[in-house]
Each structure stands twice: as C-alpha cells, then as structure tokens.
Amino acid sequence: MKILIIEDNRKLAESLKAGLEQEGYAVDALFDGETGVRRLSARDFGYDLLLLDVLLPGKSGLEVSAELRKKDIMIPILMLTAMDATRDKVLGLDAGADDYLVKPFEFEELLARVRALLRRPKAATPVVLSVGHITLDASTRSVVVAGAPISLTLREYGVLEYLMRHPDQVLSREQILSNVWDFSFDSLSNVVDVHIKNIRKKLGTIYGKSLETLRGVGYRLKG
Image (tube, rainbow, N blue to C red):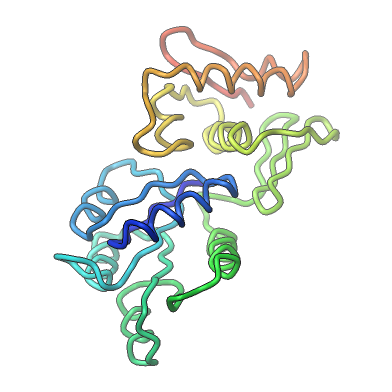
C-alpha cells in the first residue's frame, strides 16, 4: 500500500513518513497543496491513501480535498489539523475528507485510522487476492501458497501484492518501483530484480514459475 502525505511541517511529515515506512507502507511526502494536486492528478499516481494537513501554504487542505473530488479522484483522505471545533470538522468532511484527526495525536491512533480507511471495501482493490495457487490477505498481510503460509519481508509483500492486483499483466521495473517504493527511489537500482528473485524462491520450485521475467520488459504473475 502506498500513502501520500501533504504536510507543510517538514519535521512532522518526515516523522510520519519514517513511522509509516517502518509499518511496511511506501510513503511520499509533499509540503504544499498545489504540488499535491498535480501529483494526484497524474494518470497513474498509485496512491491508496492521502494524509492531508488543513493549513497548507497557497492552497489549503480543504481546497485540495474539494478539487480532488471535483476531478473524481476518490482516494481516501485522512485530514490532519490543529483545529478541533465541530464546525472545522464538518468543513473538512464536507470538502471530501473521509476521516479527521486533530493534532497533536498519538501515532498509534493515526495507524489505526489508516488501517480502517484502507480496509474500506473498494471494487477495484479487494482485500483478499487469489492468483493461481497464491492467496494474499491484505487485512493481515498474510500469504498462503497451495495451503501453506509463507513468510515475506514487508517490501517483498508489497511487490507481490502489486503483482497480484495486476495478474497476467506485464509490469515494468519502473511501475513496480513507483508503486511499492517512494517517489524518489533510484530507478536504476536492481532492487526490484533482487526482490523478485527472493519472492520466486519463497513461492517454491513449482509455484515460483508463475512469476515470469520478461527480459528487458518487466515481470508478470500468471494466473
């Protein structure tokens, strides 16, 4: 799962980014509303959740949220703000936010709200995925192959989940990097190849063959 943070307090943004990455999420941080809208208006932004501060320079979080909804960008939005009046919460929700968290907050509460928003049913992103003999449960981050559970690192899990959400499709290294790692990751790195190799090994001799390498093109998980 990939999260975008738009928060002008750089220290807080970087702290949230580091904490969420330790929980296995891929996270990007931006510091103003205009840049956030441009990033999210891209054709394939790949984010599953937006953490959005209200008091942003240039374009406020309320304006960002309302603009995204007008563009039919329905990414879940968790709004962060120091304003705790009922009217402020209503304004945020009316602007399109899905949830509202008042600063200062405990990181554990933020995590709980993130998990709750990511669990909400979405037609395009089911919680339980099944491709061939591989089953992945996003709610528990567990993977079972032919009835036997396997253990993956957080990043291996992220790569496999992305592949399973696009079965039988050829995905380039750049697509995998942009959806599983953060936006600034070096696209020339061989980190994707290393993780694919490790995943294939853990899937086993038989089922690992369903994860194909198309040299010079990318990877495909066959159903």
